[in-house]
Image (tube, rainbow, N blue to C red; front, side, top):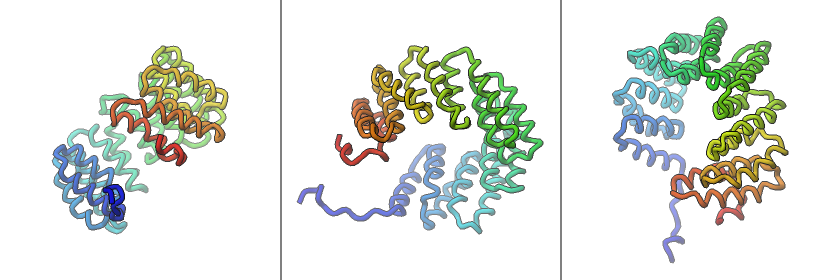
Length: 327
């Protein structure tokens, strides 16, 4: 009997989670250790939670400590959750910088909900203007909008409008529109689209238009997706075109999708070619999908380096038909 034919012990989610947590405890980088525990928090079996909480409370960085406690709160019993969130809130308020407190407070607002969430959101919003990076500040404000009371939402919207970079401002305004009353939403989306179309730099314009797509009414998406791809085509940059193809593929019309295939096949960098073909294959018409998936898989197999090749194959993994597993 070969080693390949030996029976394997059945694996359970709990046993794999325990093994992953044991490995996470050995990570020397505090940031990486916290990140690993946060990512697996929802999968940890109850017997791992005490050790996970001990690990979280031992983190030196109050930001990491608070974020890890909040992640673990979702895995605790509902009756224990409020106390753990209150503990996280106490930690957040020990962070000296208002800007640094804003991010964890926004997560806390989402976890708490109701009036307590609104209070945490307003505290986070108060610190948002101190965040020097306009990208970080803007997306933080967008994330807080659902939890802010109406007067604060209007103030938040004014702050988003004041962001100088139209490439950042347009998608932020579009996402903000989701959290405004229905009567205000079309005007704000139209404003965001007008601003994105007016961006003179083609790369920034293609990024901004792509960023608007999830927020637009479905009927408007194909035209805007085509605009984004056309802007990327003027750059003579295969890698950037490939990225925009990934961002826009699900919104392209059937005609634009068909026209994008020969461009994707001709991309020079193999990584860009594989990722663009994968994105296009995932939304191909059902009759064409098996052939498109096979083509994308063959392109992904040519990507050098195990990590990069795995990254290129990953989007296809859940949709490949059995006959393509061994390609």
